[in-house]
Length: 311
Ligand SMILES: [Zn+2]
Image (cartoon, rainbow, N blue to C red):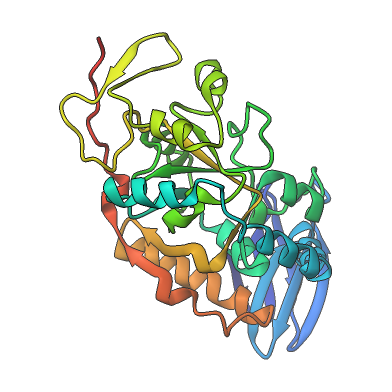
């Protein structure tokens, strides 16, 4: 949603290009306004005094998702198929006390997650709303997927990929959240494991779907993209990967039910997200979804864990 101001029945907001757009607003109306500078189109809806301004691309994206509900349901059922070694996976996950996978995202994307009934991959997003969609409910993390694994949803174990997260959240005007996910996703049939970040050649050469690939993430030492050996030294918690750049790619879809928590850095960030999401979801008839029960304050995900230890 876009922030606006209203005065004397006139609504005003700033276009993404920086130009100010002003329009007359009526009670219970829906209108399309165009930026006079960049020609970007906006939808303004006033439903009984509840006003939402969206870009046209977001409005169209939401329509597309409604049309593709069966396709999304299909993706969800595919994630109920487990790996052959699932029993062994469960044993090792328990042995290491792994409680969660972690995926971070801009708050805007939570709208997309709620509307789709889960987190979708870049490939699914392209199929639903088109590759060139500007819809910021399905924003793509730009440096993500250099390895062209468009089907993979990038997750890490217990803690975000802290270097990547730090770089992303330094962007101005962005509100981030960290989603914690069920560790069951580890043994979904097509989940892939990388001992280091998935864009690096070294991790790609050793990646795989089996238990042995999963376990390389916790090796006593792993090689990074500079050919250095990173050791589990000083000793780490059993559940932590040897490198926090290790990645788990879940294929295409992570169902809403597998999201354990949507975490914010502070109380202020959480209430900002709440204020932002509520009118949009109400407008699209999703007010019945209890997303607030997943909202939590968890600043620990914003902290850096020291892991310098090269040979
Ligand atoms: Zn503009």
